[in-house]
Picture (cartoon, one colour):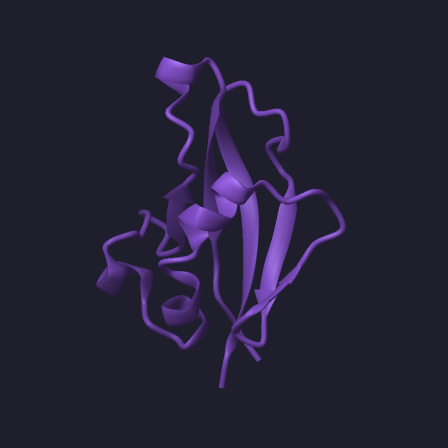
Length: 97
């Protein structure tokens, strides 16, 4: 059984030309990215190592990416302090179907 993975932008350091705090997307059925907006490839790269494990129920704590609330946190690959871009932090929660 796969979990739904709601993903929310919770923080942006610098300026991101794609996302705003509060933007959401989700992964369903373990591999389908559902979103009604443009997706940044930097964001996908930060989610790729974790989405399969999370969707199969492996706890964020076991993966070393758990926040104090138990959700998973990852950030995009843009090193904002060097590029003048924006480093986006995503909160990935788990919803079992």
